[in-house]
Image 1 (cartoon, helix red, strand yellow):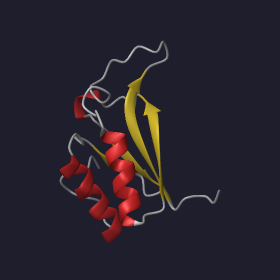
Image 2 (cartoon, rainbow, N blue to C red):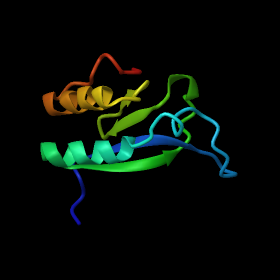
Image 3 (cartoon, helix red, strand yellow):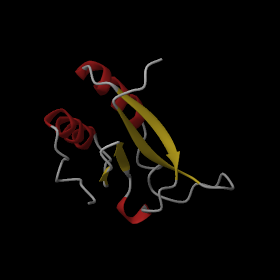
Image 4 (cartoon, rainbow, N blue to C red):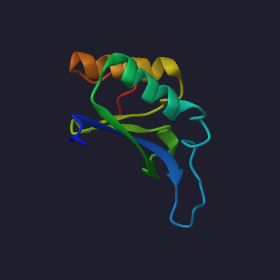
Length: 100
């Protein structure tokens, strides 16, 4: 397998004891599947990875695009995912959901 051009990290609120605390995992039902399908449909070279808690619960669900280091919050809809992927394709972070 070749190294992907980008990686999207998606907070799933996993904690050390396995105890989910944050909002990310609660608000992302079907999120990962839709994200993967959109990436494939757009022909993007991006690996999606579910992560442990990113410690920004008040801004969740949180998603990070690497190596660009673009952090996004409030990503809880297909529209948000589409806007972020549109930004990746345009080479600029989506300002509407940007945390930085």
